[in-house]
Image (cartoon, rainbow over all chains, first blue to last red; front, side, top):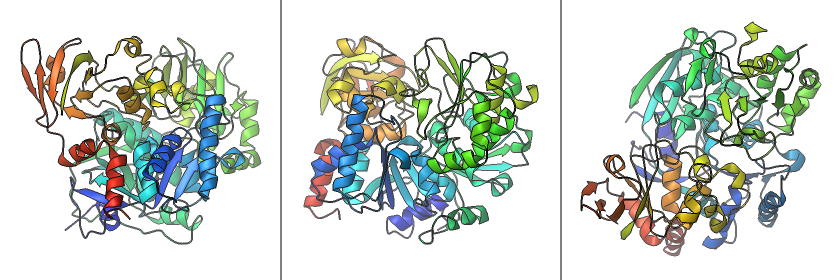
Length: 419
Length: 168
């Protein structure tokens, strides 16, 4: 029976020859992930189940990246609880302090997630690793606690929506714009419970950091996972980081898709999502006059070294508009170090940016860079719900790093062409 | 399982940031989370919700973050079940995993209003408005999810699987 890449990976991990959309299966997990917000509940669940040890101490990643460096006493207690669990169970991949970066940035960077794997994380943006040709999806803490105890999860095999992306995009248009455009097209429910499988000629030339950005936002269309079939770009990325374990799977030519969507990337402008939905997308040229109080460049969506390079290329020799707060957060310590070495950090500091330590930062409105009532921010993050970045009467707009950097200089939403 | 309660009516795409804003996620005790449930959307909810009350909402309820704090806050506030046109998938899993039942109904969210009193038979998937005895259909809860609810959530369900030697 012909299968998609998602169906093949799930079938292999359920010890079955084939699976079909709708099948309820028990799946073996290669990597289980939780962060400082979701791990405490998962640990309580694990303790309640009563197993002595986690299923595989090398296959659990605990990353304290949301409210760190600890923002208050309650957060410090949470991280302490996770740290003590990690020590007690000798968890190999526990990260905090100078080792910590954003979970979805450091796991691929360190080669801890690989093509062909099943990766389950107690964080909705766990779908990021589909960029590598893995099946990865977000769950809640109870699921994660059960995985830590048993190494397994129940899953319903999702139907797949194939997204073909064709044409050569303009230099200021990348993965972020394509995924925002898609979410605008199909809506925040458009891929609910489904797989978004990205293909087409544009994708075959798309660098890994942009694939990570696209897979990361599959959840914003309600998707279970976003996935790219692996190719030479995947192999090059993986070979640099891991010696064994990658299994390269492709969709069969006659695999069944619930729906096929085509995007002409050549005709795309940079995209901006307006409040309060990632599907409320407009072309940059149609944004009108939107003045800004804050610009944030970073997050699991756009916190890569290449994203910082893009921002720096726009900000070089310029300064953030007077009164505008520009916050830039590298996704990992490695990216931070490289950004220092390349002179990017100096360019950003010269532009009057505040550089934060690798973490989720203001993205979820809990820590560092929170908005007051009536304030507006443009961010390279993934969601702009009501109150997402602070006061319920504040507003968040979403864009790529080029547009975010240019807008910081302009003091309002605009592109590098307006500088 | 039968439930009876007063309706809290919400709209489409109620995301988990609206259910429990991130600034309240520095704790994980359900009772503390309940105190800030719908803090920005319905500030009066936490103090006036009554045990057994029912949330009725539109499409894609619980979209956004995977925070289990969202269904935990709702459950600990006393809400007995949620009826919506559709649910976001992580929220759907999380709710059943912690023993908070959900019903999908295309019709009920259109017809039911804030303050209506309903009686719900979970097994039959039937929803009845007390006032006029009007019935609304819903998709039956899948057998597997019903099993989890019957066990009291995924944790007791898993403990039982381990006891029976079904889980490694």
